[in-house]
Length: 340
Image 1 (cartoon, rainbow, N blue to C red):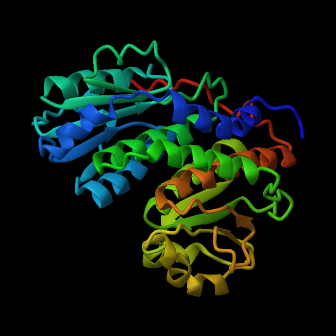
Image 2: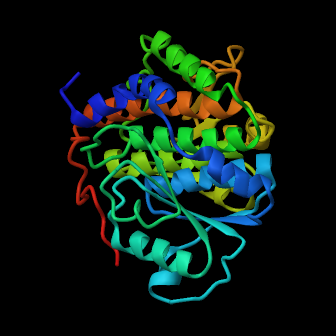
């Protein structure tokens, strides 16, 4: 395969996960005390791009496992509209790979002034936020130079999963993470095929449900920024309310099946849609399903998300190269985006 910086970073994910299980000393316990002592009533996330896809993932995790409603706050509500909130019972989580975006720096500062306990999840130990926020959670992803985020997304998922598991009192989470890295390494020879996708079709859906919908948003973003394909993410429950009208033959339909209760309904939800297109691709860990994109299950549902994305990233980069595009230089994009 062609030399590619972003591909090298994506392929480094298993080793980074293995290192993470050994070096991570983030203050999860301190945050879990706030949550378990009922001092936090809800969670607000502030992020953009890939980080906001991770924030969406967290909204399922905090609600499902900890009973905490979670809302993704558009930064402009604070930076431009200058709205005021009583955040005295809120945990505000700012997610930023670079930790440099001016709007996110401003949102953390103002959220703290409005009474929030603030958390910054970043890969940058020199971010101006880490010395100001109440808590700093390091992604431990290593230097990520590529425009397209890969390993920082999977590391953000791990940080969020670990925070939830610590809140639940699961003491052996580091052992589970290490085992997961071994599963990914052992499966590394089973690469997804870049040739089975029709490169001439640039429109489609990526459909999931639950945490699978959050992953669908990140998968959709990578199709757009790397491949210049409009593959839109939808919940399998929501696509039936109107968007299905777009589907026709030769319209790409990606189905993302996770092993949680929501993910297991995807095939039933979209059974009708399979009649409308001849381009159906399934991402699944079910060995009984004829899947174009098989990923091995960790048997810990939350960690399956990391395994899936570790398989997806090298594939989407290889697919981008097959299309004659340069994944290291996505058109019009830069590493740090300033919107404020």
